[in-house]
Length: 107
Image (cartoon, rainbow, N blue to C red):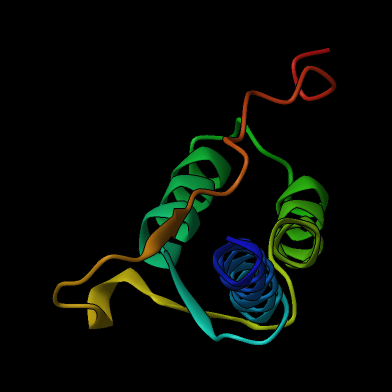
């Protein structure tokens, strides 16, 4: 009976350590792929700019802000590729913060 109990405890500890190692590897080392619809984002900014709803300085700020959003949202082990080059697969979809009308531009 004591031998059986030792085997069960050993198997349980081994399973917990293995699961923890796999979780740690997945969160800190495994490469992940995310896609971004950069064409759609830039065309939306362009349309708003050409319609006069978005000043040039605000457009530049939003493009710079996109880089900060990416750094905050994804870890260093995530590769961000354009949506146009991904044919299929299970990837994360990064959608930049939607731009709203600039309230300062309407004053």
